[in-house]
Length: 178
Image (cartoon, rainbow, N blue to C red):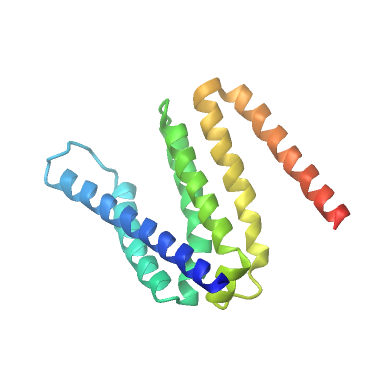
């Protein structure tokens, strides 16, 4: 039963990556054909190509239950958000943070699913538990971006610090009761 559920989650994540690649590829194609008017920097051109290719590779790897695809996602998701947060901080526009926050939360859910025992067993993953720490900073950055767009930077900082502190308290409580 656990393996069936793990395969379903794996397929769902694979479809998410395929959709991201296809939609991103279509958007990029429409801009290159001047159907949608948008100017891209060199970084954005490279980002579209890399995202498209990685999405297809991850889709294939997840459907084929390849251990390298699990590892690739666990490395790629935090790296991509690091670059994206740096990118949006250079040209921040109101509302962008909230949109990015939604995608960060989806990636946090994906990472949580990938670290479940059933999915790790399906992909024959061992000794990668130390990488699970990336979930908390991603989650906090998503919360910060979303709250920042709605209430401003000061409230976002206070909220994020409170959230981080609360998470540490919950973890200590779980460790002390187990």
